[in-house]
Image 1 (tube, rainbow, N blue to C red):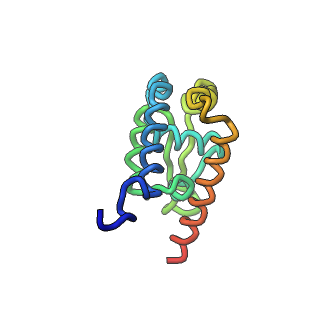
Image 2 (cartoon, one colour):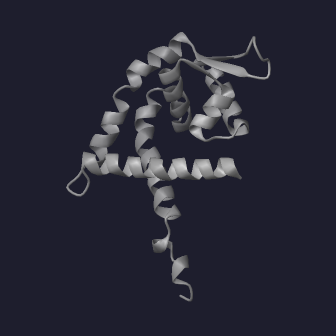
Length: 151
């Protein structure tokens, strides 16, 4: 090959992409019981943590564009998981809040992270490795997110 830097094995993006897809696939059997997708699970996690948020805040937290997030939120609203309403202070802001069903789903979902980690552990991968990887990825995400804001 003329350009060593173009080999798939030398890329940072491919192992991150492949790991993301494979980890998301590991989540799916757990999420099927809740009848939600992985992106819906992410929305639920931020709402369980914060109670309610604007669409713009959820978008920033999940690093998703609002035009990607809005159809997702509409589906969740149709499932009875959350509500959306215009802010009284600023009608341009849409506030997203969990319904009783959405709040109750938290109890069912509480075991998912532990089950996922247990499924990843092996002789070659320990909890500390997973935590270290998560922290390093968060450093990259923070750096690239800040870089994007400057542009």
